Image 1 (cartoon, helix red, strand yellow):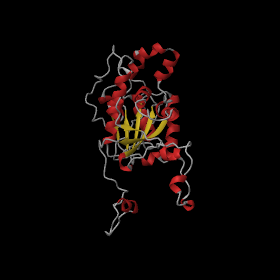
Image 2 (image 1 turned 180 degrees about the vertical axis):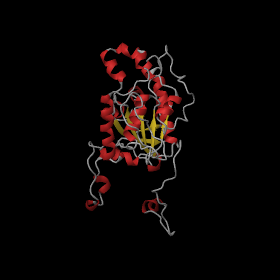
Image 3 (image 1 turned 135 degrees about the horizontal axis):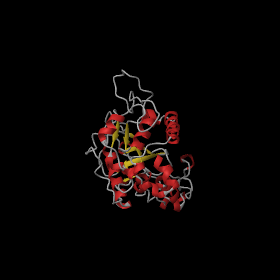
Image 4 (image 1 turned 60 degrees about the horizontal axis):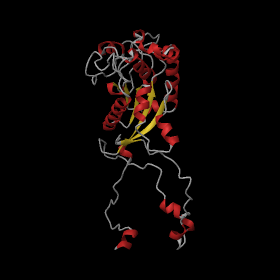
Length: 313
């Protein structure tokens, strides 16, 4: 698969001898550099900063379908698990992830939260990245109403939090499993008033089919398109709350130029409520703002012929 975007990997070149310090340079410097260093190809990724975004990828917390499916895989076919909600243990996982993103500073840096429009991902997203308890009379709708989705949770405030936007292209495998069929957007808007559902085109779930399960390759292709869409966003630091299958098959499209250890860091299966931070690089100019940290130099203007270019004249 041709993936226009990649996750830069930062690996030290342990097999190459270090270059001499500038203080020890001699007229024979060029001859003193080990041949393997002269011929080595860099194993790092080096990209313009303004073409990079930090993406915090999160798999939803434990849902009732995870518990029942581990007992008996056939449970995934049960209508009782339609649009599965979080378990009490899942909410504990959300609480712990929330503590982590606050302690690490991630919570204050995120400019946008993108979430799959299913109950378990919406609950995980607002529980992790939302505000504190909601107070009636506040001039802002809550991210989640009290008790939403069979939970015993209080309402969650949207005050001083980034925008939350629901996007269908980061949903789980489509079809067959009722736990992966979503509720109506009308219902979600009642439960999650401050979440933006405007990018979801239909009220009812027309993507999920009872007899057809989306193939892995189609899910991966959908995931790469989603990453391309992320690269067009103006925000530089984004959280994405999604699903195990989506993450696994999407991320396996990336990192094929990495050593196996780094490839595994990118694409191995996510645990419930696991967060991984990656860098998304726009190599094809899908969309990026002008650099704000670069400085053009030569102000005031003056002669600046480099010595190496002078040698070529």
